[in-house]
Length: 306
Image 1: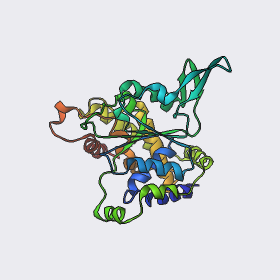
Image 2: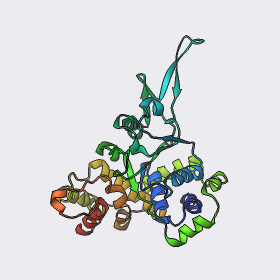
Image 3: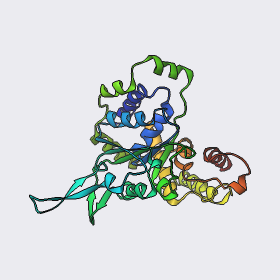
Image 4: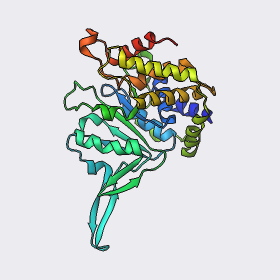
């Protein structure tokens, strides 16, 4: 079953060149049933990665371009009066899909960003007092530009905590960039992509994660990391219980992709930065340095004994 996941990784790797680690982490996030945030400068392949994952997994895909004038109803949907039926008829918004690409999510106002909170947490959406279930599986893959760029809004901590993982693609290396320059257009390649894994197989793989064993000692290690993040004075707030659960679930998915039926500390370490860095805000007065969250999470990992 996880052979199909590796086939998806190989196929997406033909579109997004030289980013095997990030592709693997993105698939781990989806296997764990979480939502993915991709943060980087424009033009490095964030949207292409999201689209390629949806196509390879055979999932229904909708894209919403977040802008400052986007309204919650533009995402969730709206009721319009129908004269023939003499009543209001609900027209579902783009959120009623299996993969929602929230492109440049931090260009929308906090009010519109909050429209995603219920969907991401409860897998349902409420409009006009009526709650409707979303399709299964349901993933939000959001992209955001660096917050120093013009026209961006800072995502609140409550929104960031809903994303199981946050990735940064970065610029391609010389060889990958040359292949992009000389190769076929990525949009054309996306149109010719085939489905490497069916949605039912993805749901089965997600259920199989429950069989991945986590020992008491390993849970002790995850707890030690969470407690250290709250007490070491490097972060304004430490990891929440939801973050610790996300870390354990992502570690299970990483172990499964490695072909193991149990989690080892190296699995936790492999996913710690993408799971924790976006949730932990550096405490400026304590660090006295220009280190970002990712560097501080690596320091946190080194400070906690296995």
